[in-house]
Length: 341
Image (cartoon, rainbow, N blue to C red; front, side):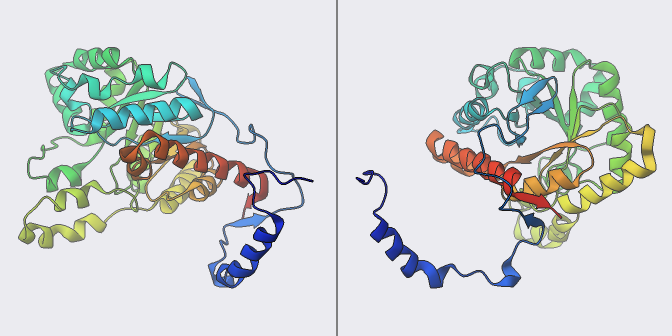
């Protein structure tokens, strides 16, 4: 039978096996002990192996969220457009970077205006910091947010809570009130879906408890271990301040820790819980990290990445497409052959 031109001959394949065998050994200590591997129970996965997820009134074909990153910088428009297009292609959700610049001007609107790229079926959320939300509440200027959401044709708003980042930022804003008070004000005055997230430190159990008692659309971990905006701001400081405050950037909670906190709160809070949807982000390096934590958490969840998408998005749409396709294909294999221990 004639060999297909795009496949290596059997002889070439066998030679590769011989040449690479000694380089392909995995020590027992390197084994990923989070899973049972069950190879006997299924053939290779079909396209629909990964279950769809209802999120913010829409359906995600794959449980992956493009976490908030950039807006208002030179590359932002191109990056956001590529991210939105790949979300449309694979059925993902997307959070925009900080939309603060849109509250009083349309100058940077093209950088964020990606509904045409992402399509109507994928969830798209705008994003503002807790300091801006506090100012809007003090001014009773909620209509600014409503206008911004309408301009973007966004499905809702992400509020990022970042006291360490603001404090370490040379031009940072002062946060006067406890963020939970401002978030409660937003829920009362804005009739839109709201997600609350951190920016790379994660969220401790008492803060998680307070958030889970509110009727939020979701809580995003943004845990310690991924892109850390406190560290980012420290890199913008002079050497003296960087050395003095670097220890603060290491304070926080990992996504694994936060998963345990939420599961414990599920027991202690019981029927007091109003928010039951989570985005698992912060240190999620690959699809196995996401798959593992989604199965460990006792609530509906998807997983998010920021820098994991940003690097290929800066290169080209093709690089981003290949990255996401690998994530989706990896999830297909995980759902087919791996059981979480």
